[in-house]
Image (tube, rainbow, N blue to C red; front, top):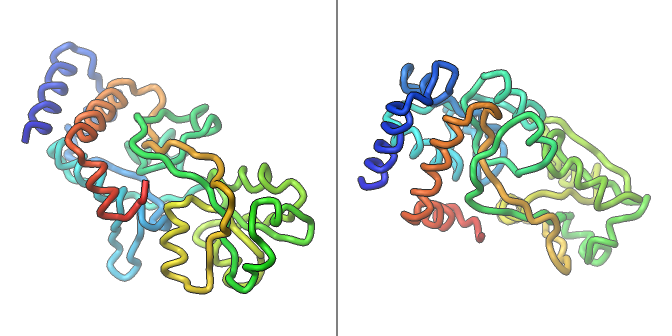
Length: 258
């Protein structure tokens, strides 16, 4: 209750100070009673879409539902994919996204909130190849195909990490791990958060026991770059929720291990 009151006070100061305008997503959300969030629905345990019910579950979904509740509005999840995640924000298709890795490329076009957790990249393979691949260097040769999903940070990382390997970049709704399961690639790379869920779901997959994960990256929400009023509000909300232990509790609920 204290968090909601604190946010309400902050919002009141913003509006009373005359800094909010019709151009701000914040005013659009309050005026229409709906927070529109772009989400891919294919990143376990962050955002998962149930096609049968057309509904979403996951860490991100819980975060955005809580944000909407504190704003006093409804939340609407807008389907998107990784290659159009940023353009959906810049085009105004949604007010923000769920979690996205912070990258200089994305920051050229969109704004970011404060970060509330971080992840790292690990490679996954089929268990039958366990003796063949034991560290990063084992994957970096011309006889190995490494898969990644178009529009993700791993799409760029795969070329950086494995300059001598072959690449297979797949486009959503296809996913990179499916290439390994089907034998069309020997490995794929993804966040440690998703990797733990994949090996639990698909017993034939395993995380390569690398000496250390790579590219530890902060994660945040994508927002309209020029909307400082909305960015300020979201950052205030994140700060208050961090102090209340909200993100720690949610991380434990979804076993983020972070």
